[in-house]
Length: 339
Ligand code: UDP
Ligand code: MG
Image (tube, rainbow, N blue to C red):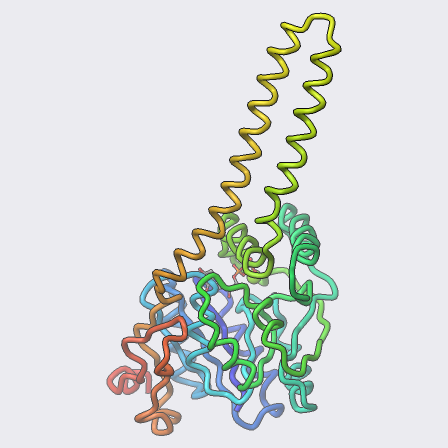
């Protein structure tokens, strides 16, 4: 079975069209397949539309989260629920085009255990983001202590073995493209042209993107922590230059006053920068110690046809893989309603 996991947050404009495209791409390519839609606390009619889709298509699995947890929380819940031998992860806004699905599956059939969809080109109507994405990948490429394929997001296929290895990683601030590379396995790449969002607004805030970029860098590099050494060198050199120029100056009092003020501000700001960088790491250590889940599932709706197959099945492994599900079984009464 091939599973496709899709996080959904307020995508009412696109859901039906998206599912048609995914179903079209998978029909005939995979004998058995499911699409796991994770409703990440949508406030529009997304959930109703998903349940409606499920009523007419038994391939649809709907995971309801207890609230809006954000992109990574939704993805995690979906990956834990998916039952396929191969699991594809993609966004539900057509930026990851469904027509690439057969290529991913074909690579998997040829023996690849991780198939990464890499962006050959990117259409991005948001100017600032279009400028920042290449910058981010350049910084990450330079800083990362481990080679991570650049220009690749979550869009990928993972074989069950690779997926279980990724899910076994407990870290709370996840950069999935990095973890996916880190676990290894036989990798393969499929290139695609990334489209602009097919409708609706982008759902991720600018701040959450910055946080994600920081997660990527802090979880794959210690280099920012070493920044303090470089800055120490810089501020020491400046102090020496100031000292020398004061010795040579014609009006030493004015120069000394200026020099001292500049030096105080300069060293102060360097110290704050270093403390800030340290804080980014310490905050993440705190997240690990608190060990809060990435998201909580309130219920999983499966179609009646596929329900008998999972009676008695424990969807969440006994170890805490970053997510706890209070209720993972399809609810018979809900199923009846859907039917
Ligand atoms: N999404 C989600 N929870 C959120 C924000 C977004 O599940 O809190 C979903 C969203 O519905 C979409 C995917 O994550 O399917 C990517 O979001 P979006 O397209 O807004 O991000 P962008 O492509 O702008 O980075
Ligand atoms: Mg998008």
